[in-house]
Amino acid sequence: MSLSSSIASNPPLLLSPRRATLTVRENSQSRLLEGIGVNWCDAFGMGGETGMGRRNAPLNTPCIPLLDNSEGWDDVLADLTLLKAGCIRFLLPPEGFITRRGTMDFDSAHFQRLERIAAWAGANGASIILDTICVPQHLQIKGEDGPGGANQNRAAADPMAFAEKFAGPLLDYCVAERGWTQIRYYNPVSEPLYDGVYHHPKGDSHRAYAGLLASLRKELIDRDLSPQRISLIGPGSPTVQDWPIPDFHSRGLDLDPLLDAYDQHQKSARFDGTPPNSNLDSLPMTELINRHLLPHIHYAQSRGKPFIITEMAHSYYGGANGDRNGPATHDTFLLDAEFTIRAINAGAQGVLRWSLLNPGDIDGRWALLEPSENSYRRAENTFYGYATLIRYARPHADVLETVVESSFHPWPHVHACALRKSPQGDLTLLVVNDHESEQVELSVKLPTALRKKISIIRTDRIVKHAKIDEARRDFTDRLPPRSLTAYTTLDYDPLER
Image 1: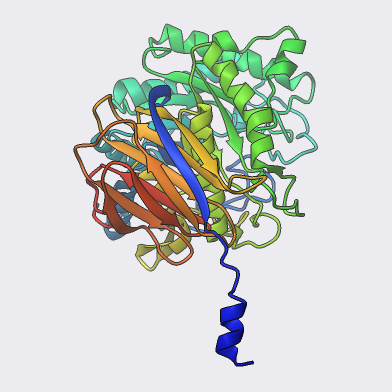
Image 2: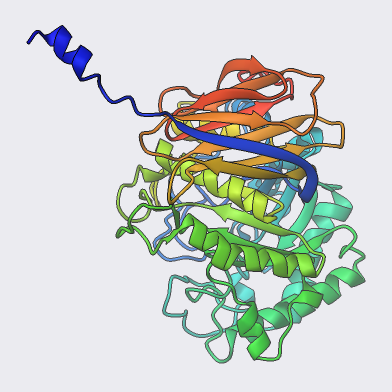
């Protein structure tokens, strides 16, 4: 029998393409108050090993442009503008500006850099979360550090002294004197309650943290800063599953009267259907969101307060453990993108990635922009991926209800959120296909006819933040495996700032 007759009598089995339908509805579920943003850690490059309050965090490798490096600053701020970051968490290390006499040096380089970031935020409508990382050493209680990762980062010996002599004057200078009104949130201590970071060697760390917030709130009210001008945000636990509110309640303590917004950090998700590994204790995305994130967001919503993921640093593909290049890979970016989309649908009102600039020698290659002589180069996977994720997710956008029907089982692999600036405003859909190898034929059904054309912007393993096509009204598209696609009526050219 000839080959041709064999094929004719036994035609090859043609597999149907994987299909999904995305239906966007008119009703708004929540609002993306702060958009998607980045972290700026000003401790990097300051020298020593105590500026971040953690063990094994040497700060000797420069990654932030020197103040007189105009080319570097121009490039960094221009690329922030291209990203259109909605919010920046600025970590301000006390050790960098507290003098030997215990006073604050407001002429230090840290405040000059904060001034530049505040000016950029003001010009671009972005918010700033100011985070002072840890209690200044001269105000810490005496004693041993906790058994975890803290390094000279104990609780305040006198919470009122912290408020009156440090946080109050600091915020007065930044907001009242300098007029950096884009600073809208303040967090006194980063990750205070886990791994010994706000350790009280002679008492209870939960009670000590609640006492700090109470003293701080009183001081900021007395200075007419809170809540009208500065919102206090906490508790900033290191992963979503670490939620300390029940531990406070078991002690008869309630943080809600002391906080204006709730936040957590996040690093422990993995794609549904992928196995655990030795890099960290991870959870499947659906379990993490349904069992942990959703209840925490609902808790904040029930009290009329925002919930923000202020630091996202997924480590499933490496970082401090495993592959040090893991944070710079496309797979880590897509894990970030899917978590962000699903967190927004769950009601998170902002998600901030760790970190815009990073030395790469502490816990992995996290930077979106990496030093290159006097300038900076864009990390290919993460910078361009985040350009697709951030640029079209504008702050204060309404989050519309979406329904995804997928032919995959048991995991849908396709996830989406829909953002609209106003009832008749620009519309953006962010869609992830997280399947390792399968392309998906996606049918999109919109609630109303759009007057403007829809630009299709994509990042996948090969294409990086590129305009693929245009569409109108309901349409069909093919999603490559491990891809993020933005469908948007916003008229932003992908490569123009």
